[in-house]
Length: 104
Image (cartoon, rainbow, N blue to C red; front, side, top):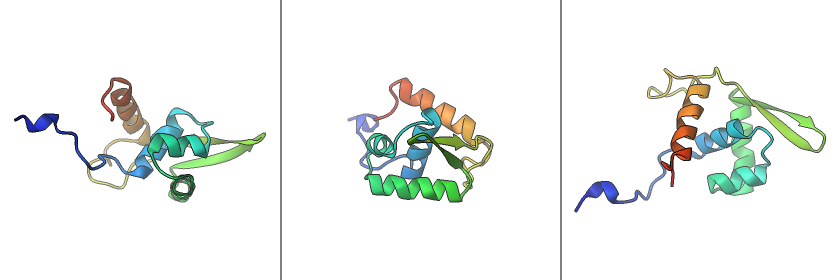
C-alpha cells in the first residue's frame, strides 16, 4: 500500500493562512465568502480578519457598502519556516498550488 495516496485528516495551513490567501486573491471578498472558502463560520472569519488587522497583515477601507482589504505584502510570517518569504511570495506560491489542483 502506498501511504502517499492517503488523504490527511488534518489541515496543512491554519485558518488564518486560508483567510489571508482568500483576501489577498480577492480584496473585495465578503466575509461570508471568506468563511465558505476557508471552511469556517462567519464569526470565526470575522475574528481572524480582526487578528490579521491587529497584527498588521491587512487593513480595510469602506467603499460604498463593502469593505476593500489591503494586504501588506511585505510582512513576514513570524515562523521559522516562512519568515524568509514576504506574504506576497507565500500567497503567490499557495495560489499557484491551488490553481494547479494541489488543494483539497
